[in-house]
Image (cartoon, rainbow, N blue to C red; front, top):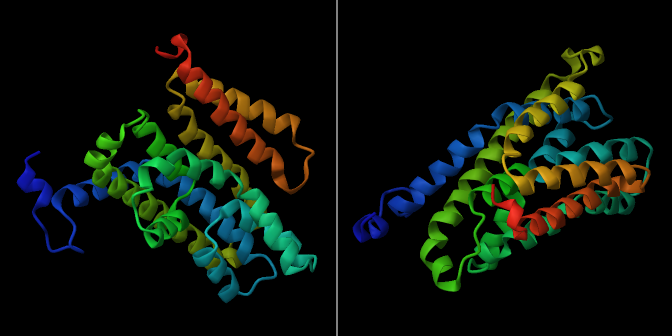
Length: 253
């Protein structure tokens, strides 16, 4: 790609051609998981629509919270009349995995101003993190990060906005049509199957397979922990095992 292509401006938010292509590449990558994301969002929207929340409250939660697991966990607490503090603490603990995620990609976005990092943090979810880290696995030098930062940054923008748009479409649809869907349909199980269908093809190398095994074992062994802490521990175990596996000579297969 020539230097002219890298610096020429196009009439779209002042982005360069490289940046726009990177954003589109991120959208295309995220579109491969539209079935899983939409299904899980639909299940979450249905749960909110059938809860004690009003339609307006459910829509606001979907748009501003944007954390499916935390949203589902908060519904029974809201129904039981728990305090706002308790609900916030529960949501924070459930979402501890995002601290781990942010550490994993921090080097790629540390050059951005705070407000951009804050916005990117809001839009980034599990699928975006997985797709980004599976695409960019190598450790870059400072010079390499500077040379490639624009593409990686806007690729992540594409992943994040694509994920958000798909999620909101499914979630809002579920909220609005919750009263029309019978509980006997078992959509929660269908959403879980859709997630499995997407994750399995990602286990295409040694480190990923060992990480999945570690996560499954830890999640089951720690199942009795409160506030779904087993999920955070499982993710932490998966990251540690994946890092150790990548350093092993046997990991290159």
